Image 1 (cartoon, rainbow, N blue to C red):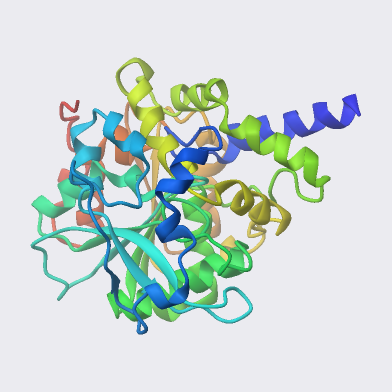
Image 2 (image 1 turned 60 degrees about the vertical axis):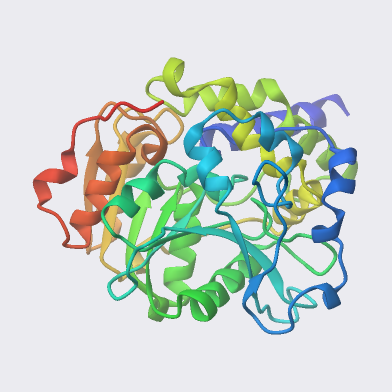
Length: 379
């Protein structure tokens, strides 16, 4: 038993070191009291949802946050997170019967006052994260008038994960994103994927190239196949998930995600990443994804045909730039690489103005020189 436990813990740590994206990612306890508070959204019968796909009507708390967020949202100090959280919405998406028995309420945020006449960006967060990961980039894009959507991938964030969902596999995640694009954005998108979100973006681009106008990979995890704890006994998986939630492990990942951890790897950053773990069904969704086997795309990256921008933090300590960044350029004929200087694993959090400039340049909206914009002071 001891060797099995050691192997399990090693697998979890390897997962966190290699594929853990969100710079702040989640951690928590079971949250039984919060489950009661969120019961209405997570376990309500289908009759409480609108019958056709569209926006889901949600209530706001006295503090202005949507009621599907846990009470710990009131403890968050980051102004960018507070502002974005108050704008979160739910949209229904249809799902094939093999993945869900009904429509899935999908959490998202969108830039305001922007035109969708040109390209629209769809931002995909990383492993076990939420769309709040994009809280500093969205305002930068909004200032430039760029239409952008940040979505919670099925199984993570605040997207529905009750008994209606049959599986949280890569195929189910792909189906959710396909429906979200077709039913709500209603045109091909520029996919922007961070870390494991890059893998998810590649998967969608390979299987539905008609939906992808361009591709942006941000410190992307395209060459690490599989998922930790696949096939382990259920009781070991549940122990592993508890370890995955633990504050020490989360704070460790939080610190190594940044080039400047003292400035960005704060307790509040970890608190933000914990929020979605406090909602109903997180544990089971994690186990379901792990038992699906995860993504196996390392041998298929070269099949990507979409024009691709690879953005990489020069000081990334989670995914070694020397090992992975240039490999995307070698494998994808249409790809080009831009380094984000003095930056770790999450340019969208650590260097949001510079990343926004790079994205706009990639879309042909700004001079290329602006893509190396200097760092801007951020709280």
